[in-house]
Length: 432
Image 1 (cartoon, one colour):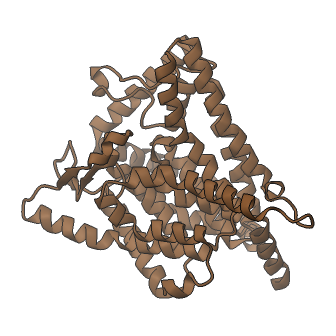
Image 2 (image 1 turned 180 degrees about the horizontal axis):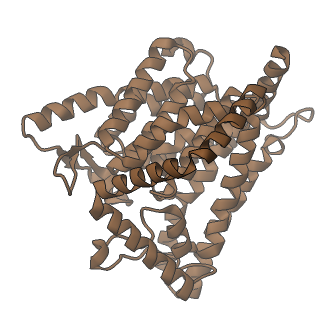
Image 3 (image 1 turned 45 degrees about the horizontal axis):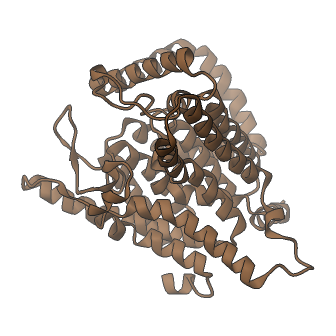
């Protein structure tokens, strides 16, 4: 049980575990955005305080020297995001007030994308604690969904209340506590669970699936996977369904590249695909079009937002971007330009500099995890996390949702911890 798992755990591990285990309690209070935004900085302060109080013995390597080069790359890249923000604000004369507000937004968004991997790398966090916490959080979705289905069946509204914590600032959707929402096109119930909107719940279901599969206790593992599956199904996210079904087979296949049987199978499959290329292509294209046509209004808005973002980025602010998000015209339902897509949003707000500041560390981390996945179970999960992040960056703005998927970023950092890498490599050598 949790008491055994937390035996001799550090204060940081306890904070992480109870933050995960109490996910739905925090959500009902409307505090998910605050928890995710504050947690990373709180853990950093605890680490700094611990180092300051204890000091570093002369015979011990300083903790900062043990940080993975990839984690340093994330830190530098997210600081580059801040630089792009400041330069764009100065260039476009947005004023001191707007600059301060945007900097605070950076600290609650892009900064956390580097901060949680840094914490996972610095702190000696037991990955079993993160896995158990995610299992509890994921399984908590089941009773939440049952209550929501009951309310919907009785014709009761899914909206509960708007948390007064919204006064702190952030996207209003993050403080809107509800059992379910309504699909604007079909008017059927659609669950967003702990996320601000339903597609983001699909994103969380994929992360929960990957991490819950690393739980060693079979009962908790099954409950976690069940919860993640319920989240994915009821979110009705088209991208979520596809990624959820494909992610585990992809990770298994990509983590077995050292196995000669995989290459033999690849040698058989590729020629077969070439021979069947035309019908496979037509089937994939037809499936893709059917998915897009299932919600034509949403597809139209996304495509129009993308065109506006690209045109205005190229014509108005190609290097540093516009600095701030701007509402679009009526044709896109006044949604922010660059929303629903991390890369278009980056180009519009932070220009080519911001685009590269995410693309470079994400690409190198994905490649590194592909290599490390051949030796480490932790890295296999991190490889899946990288794949999900890359895939969902085409449908969501990653910095907006970091307050809910921070456990995945923390796991990335844990898998890059030198001690964990050494253990994984040693086990592979011993098995060989």
